[in-house]
Image 1: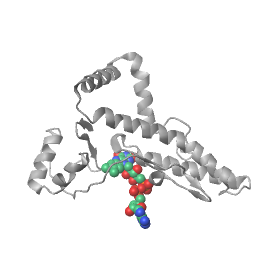
Image 2: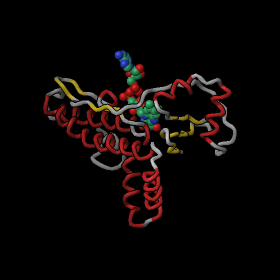
Image 3: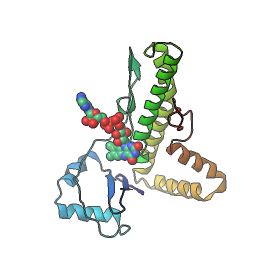
Length: 206
Ligand SMILES: Cc1cc2nc3c(=O)[nH]c(=O)nc-3n(C[C@H](O)[C@H](O)[C@H](O)COP(=O)(O)OP(=O)(O)OC[C@H]3O[C@@H](n4cnc5c(N)ncnc54)[C@H](O)[C@@H]3O)c2cc1C
């Protein structure tokens, strides 16, 4: 479950076993030290405020870690006998929980172009082989970088007209039949099951 609070998304990700949940809590950079340094008691109060009563009383059981969030995109994913994958090539906001999935698609695509090249007797590190990998992966990545960045901008602010537009848009997306395909497309994209998927991601052998 994810809430879009003015400071940024606040996500609760259930862990195996049923009674623990991982929390991704976004705050502006200048507020991070404040939350990181709160006493356990005050931190629990702040946490409970955001979680609400949805999960009953919450108790932090693990440490707190903070990471600066930013958008990063390498100009090139390849160089001489070198290919960048996952976050060495791109870093996106975790708002849609896509970073790891995109990285796995990179690895699967790279494995596929390398194996295809070897099969036909080509050098797997040759520029045109790596170029195929770069072309393949940039489209998917740029789409997700743009989408996650737009979602952050749309949801992480409390400018009144934008709030109204956002509420209307979400209601329309949930209730208007003609918009159902758009919603389904977005969900399928987030699940990583649309587009030109590498064989490994489709569950096929290389
Ligand atoms: C708060 C948060 C929530 C997220 N939630 C989700 C989610 O729900 N779903 C999702 O799909 N993705 C999510 N992501 C993104 C996901 O965590 C990343 O996309 C993924 O971990 C990237 O994997 P990676 O192997 O490229 O990089 P990393 O996981 O960062 O691994 C890189 C490793 O290299 C090590 N390293 C760095 N420099 C050096 C060095 N010089 N020498 C040796 N080792 C080095 C690092 O210590 C690290 O262990 C989230 C990210 C954040 C920050």
